[in-house]
Amino acid sequence: MILQTVASPHARAGESVSVVMLKVVATLVPATVYGFWLFGSPAFWLWLITIASALAGEAVCLRWAGRDPVPLLKDGSALLTGWLLALSLPPWAPWWIGVVGGLFATTLGKQVFGGLGNNLFNPAMIARIALLVSFPVQMTYWVVPAGAPGLLDGLLITLGHIPVPDAMSSATLLGHAKTDLARGVDLLHTELPGHAFNWVGARVGSLGETSTWLIAAGGVALLTMRIITWHVPVAMLAAIAVPAAIGHAVDPARYIDWTTHLMSGGAMLGAFFIATDYVTSPSTRAGQVVFGLGCGLLTWVIRTYGGYPEGVAFAVLLMNALTPAIDRLIKPRVYGRTFTGKPASVQKGKSK
Image (cartoon, rainbow, N blue to C red; front, side, top):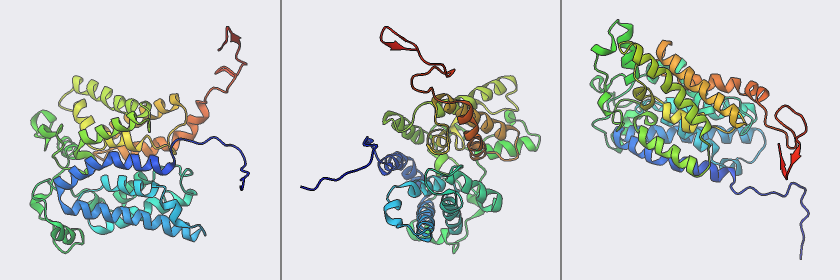
């Protein structure tokens, strides 16, 4: 009998990184499939290309660093990064948007910092912002979810061999509101596209914002499985809803109501799947609440007063930059000591 001697620690966690990643991916499947049904095969091809590019970028970087890419690709982190990025892109964006975004996310957004666990910013969101500021036309070309083409026609659209009819293009709900306000038209005298269908999700937007209920259901599943806790998503959604409700109550012609804010754009996807990233969010529960409040408030401020109609990605990245400061200011209690650092006294079998 051969006995193996292994250095401590000997504690074994219940779930590995790959299991956690695959559970998160599984909760995204219903919303993604619904998006395919709405926008047809171009969305499927772009999703596939984006994920493949993210995996390829990760593999090349790992091979370049002299590491075997196969075991590390199996942890699912590159797959999830590509998946989340694909959900944030215009469904009919050209193929090279997915390639550039996927490669950017896992190379410059992740591996350049040292790989999984070392990146400062969320890789999917930093790739989305890089694409948005570099290719604003392609990243703001949205199509109406109608007349989904077949697999071959969809592939030709994604590859650029079939032009997208102008009649199918439209602004997102938040973009439409932003444009009308900029033209001096108040929200009481404009018809927001798809407003009546907000709760169903069949409207213009990315795969990660059209099926809001399915994304929220996926988030609840993550909470139920204890993959995430309530602190970040609840704080973020509350910080969007409260100022939106106050603003709309004060001036409904100028401010969008809170339900539209929550059910539009990437609010749900950001709250449950992006801001909750273990690596780029604070480690303490109190810090996560602060982080979520910052993400939500910045999202509302950018949407309301900024130049872009959507602000989730910007808000998450800004708060990612503040995460080290939050962790420095809000520290967990040291075992055996109070929050002020004094030795905890023991009374009747309890410590305080």
